[in-house]
Image 1 (spheres, rainbow, N blue to C red):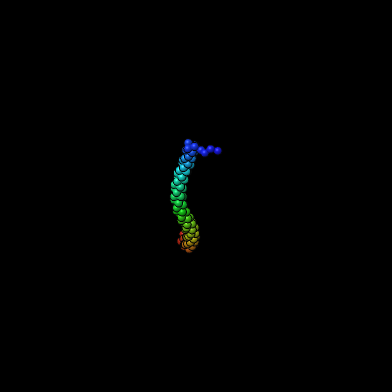
Image 2 (cartoon, rainbow, N blue to C red; image 1 turned 90 degrees about the horizontal axis):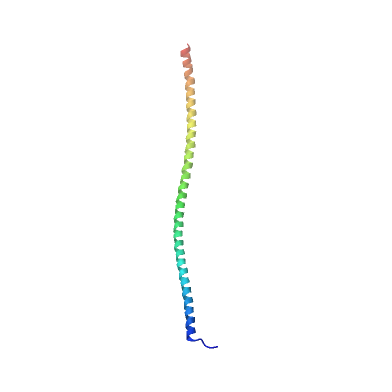
Length: 111
């Protein structure tokens, strides 16, 4: 077999350089895509962190609101019970006063 000529070697070197240039171009393209993905991932993390903070704030507010609702219900029940007791005392007092005054009224008007 004969040795390759300088022309053949230069042609092969050119083909290798072209192939290396294509590989380099693909690597640069993939690198830029990876950088974009990293930027988007960073932005996504920031948004997720912000969303988590908002969710924590909403959770605390909801928990506080539930506590206030429970407290309001307890106060409402206590107030209703107090009204019932007050009404009973009022009715009892009125009936007692009426039962004490009725004999006087009856004796005054019917005698």
